[in-house]
Length: 466
Image 1 (cartoon, rainbow, N blue to C red):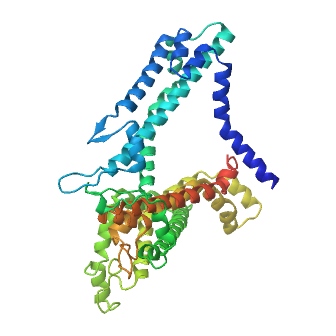
Image 2: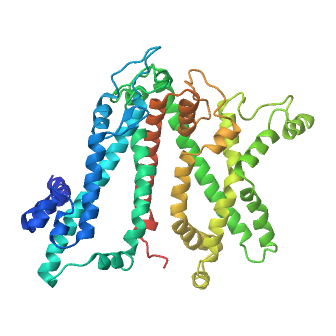
Image 3: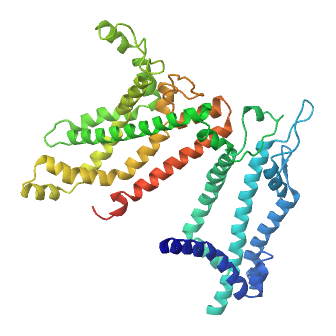
């Protein structure tokens, strides 16, 4: 109980620190710093930093103008009206003669306005910190830095900030804001019936989430757990079979005395060199009902008639096992190259010491080679598992999620969460349900990544093999 209280206190202290600093700057700062809390840049002008002060003032004036004038795009306003529209998502229902409020744009512009506001608040805080720094410079050195000195500093010792700022802005605009927009879609009833501009969509809270879990008789809930289970099964086998298959192949190729190692590596690397969509489509036609493999099996008497192993397979597990086997052909070369690099970097002295101690080959493999390979390749193993959870190409190109199953609700027998998401959004325009699957997939992959990596030796024993 005491530990819980300590953890809560630490969390509250950490959260409150920015507000405490903000308060202290206001109380301890000069008149100019106090004024900066109301008019950006006034503290810099007060200290003689005219250019810097004008830049901060222009930022504040531009934000105020943006919020007050509420510029419109496609008759949908930004500014303070975007906040109102974000709450209502529109009030004007459409008919034949009058278009409805565009709920999608209102949601999007609300998110954009939030992003602009957050960037403004960052600049606002930066202006106060700049004025407070000027206070400290006068106190300690008797003068403030000029704009030329600040620019030289930003191109010198703090050049990393200059370079990271555009990258951070790009991440906010092209990654963070679209992600927030997608998350918010999951809390609406936005679907194909509400995208034509004649009908509004509304906030529905957690109804879309509960549809996946708390309605056992519903089509969505009845299909979610089977798809999730198959996604995890696929990710497990697709990851570890490829991983250990690649290690085994690397051990065989890198064995001492084997001639033509480069030729063997080149043969297996050909699979990587060929674009995946080409190789997968070729494999689908090769083992198809009328492909050469089927003809061979029929002519040799192994099969009495052609049989589908993929989309039209008589049993869903036939298609699933076939996909896993094909994935071995596609994925093992990657693991082989990675394991080969790790094997060639194992110090020879470790092997020599083990042989002097009388260790056998299997013991050396188990105690030296495998731990070293696993230690080096653990980040790859984790990223491979996450990548297989969100794998799209191999499933969609080989089976398109089929064979169909009873009560599948768009999801077939080999559909993963990501291919189900694709069908819900692209084929059925059920954007709200697709957004829910996107969020659930993100939660699964992030939890797996964080928990697995923090428990691995690559994280706990970072310097063990250095």
